Image 1: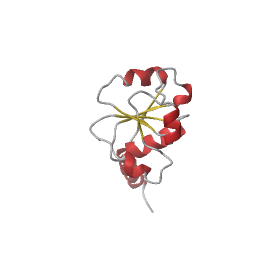
Image 2: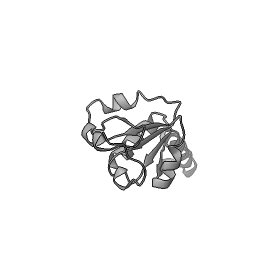
Image 3: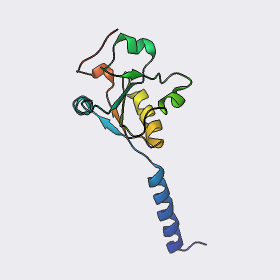
Length: 125
């Protein structure tokens, strides 16, 4: 049977492993996300479908469709040396994308309310 000391050591070791492997991202409101968009080196990505993107997107955003079967392969082509900002319609897809990116050592911010509640500029095509 394990002693309390051995159990504590094992639990501490597991906690260290989990914390090292658990990457995080920053979820921002409209105002804070808009401030981050002023960074010229930022990679801004719209996670919505091409038709959603065409209906209106944030200026300078590129479109990487979360629903595309090659999404993960495509999103991981982004430059790891630059911060990535992601958004979608309501925040669900962008949070999932942010998790994928952060687990792959990207620095990520995401718009927590999505573009549906965005109060800044929108480009339409």
